[in-house]
Image (cartoon, rainbow, N blue to C red; front, side, top):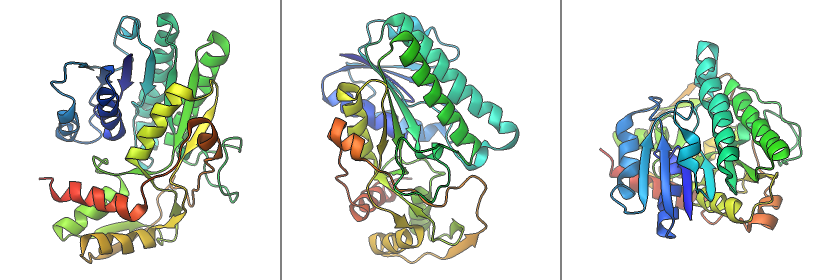
Length: 312
């Protein structure tokens, strides 16, 4: 197949590209290299795909590219490109999130309809749910995001649904739950924790550490994303999570065990937009996609630690 991956130089996108290439597909990657974190990190992410005969990378914003011609003859589109980050999405920067998460998604959907793409997969986020005492979180539950970032990801989901319903575009949306692993973005918690352990610096922890997350290893996310394109039911939304509710204080214990180091913890105030607890109900993904979490938190942290130790 010819497939297109947006956000192809990112944490998840670059590993999805490598999986697709390993399966023998022709991959067109698109990335705008937004300066949310250093370009050098993204260039390192591309090392495994660059030079591959079946890979081509186009640099540019989805809002500006001639997308219908790029998507011509494409069997699957994986839309992972987004302006990431919950905490920076407040204030004037919200405009950037609307531009890159809502407008860019609409432009890509229009192009997919024009090109007659047979399958469109949208990478959403557990941030669309907001805070709710009802756990685990189900796809049919009420979504009330508590961050502007979450609002834009939910807006993207609504656009995907609209183009599926009104244009017959076969669409599937995936709500990723706290993804971690090698190549994780530098603003994300595990990256910051492991880097601090490596460098002997302080770990800054927001809140009391008793907030919980459903952590999902990146390999499992990539597997679910591939399955969504091949066998997801058009129009469906699927949770993709690790299946456990883990306190951040327990994560810090695991960091100490994996690294053999005991960094100093500096506790900071809870940040606006941070959800208190998450836990995914993955029954729909298990039934339709054959999804199951295969990597434990301890194993996944060890693999990210191995990657972190070898970084300069």
